[in-house]
Length: 86
Image 1 (cartoon, rainbow, N blue to C red):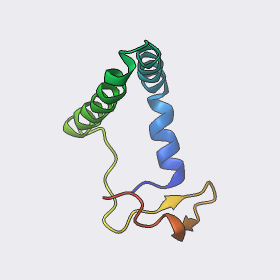
Image 2: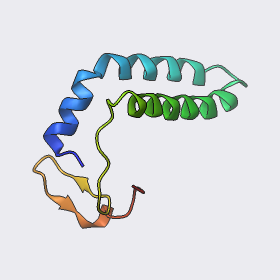
Image 3: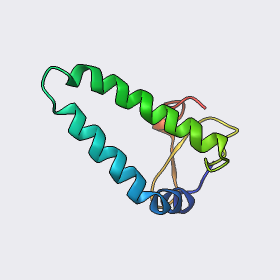
Image 4: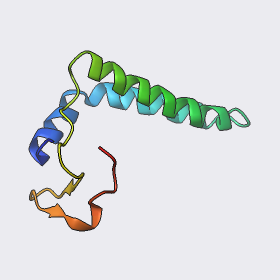
């Protein structure tokens, strides 16, 4: 998996793309009545985007072991182990 610093750099390099996606997703979700559809379509769009990153070789390598969350100091938090499937 990525260290905290590596994950931060990965996100920093894609900050504009993430902000654009989030802005568009939020705008679609405030449309009355249609927001029920957009909530689900935004999740699908994010998954497809992640798949595209993986196909392009731009996604970080997955953890080989159990998933753990890292604090800024790099300490693993045992209460988060297993919270995310690998």
